Length: 172
Ligand SMILES: [Fe+2]
Ligand SMILES: [Fe+2]
Image 1 (spheres, rainbow, N blue to C red):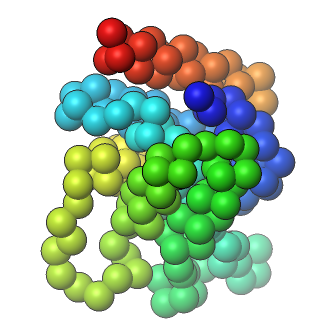
Image 2: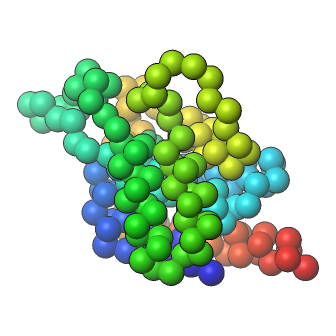
C-alpha cells in the first residue's frame, strides 16, 4: 500500500503544499480520518484525498497579499489538484482505481468554481469536503498556518499507522 508518508514526502507534494499550506493539508487529513471512521468510508482514500486536496492551488497574489477577488474569479484549483494528484499517485504506484477515486474527491472538494446547483456527493467525497471545511478559517487563514517539518512528518506517520490499523481490521 502506498503510504501517506510516501505521498507527503514526494517533491511534487512538497512543492505544491508549500503554496497552499502544509499545516492545513495535515489537519484536513486528520479530520478526514475521523470522518471516514464515522461514515464508514475507506480511510486510506479519504486521508490521501484530504492531504492532496489543495495541491492545485495557484498563488493569487497582488502586492504581496492574497487577492481573494482574483482567486474567486479565476481559480480552478480543484481541477488542477485532481489532475496533479492523480499523476503523482500513479507515479508512486497507487492502485489505478484508488487514484481515480481520490482524484474525483479532490475535484469535488469545493463547488466554488462550479455552476450553481446541488452536487450529489458520494460518502468519500462528502468526507473530504467536510474535513476541508472543518479546518477552514476566516479570510483563508488556514492556508498560512505554520508547522515545522518534524512535527509534520510525525503527524503523517501517526496517521499512516491509524489508517493501516483500520484497513487491516477491515480485511480480517
Ligand atoms: Fe481547496
Ligand atoms: Fe482546503
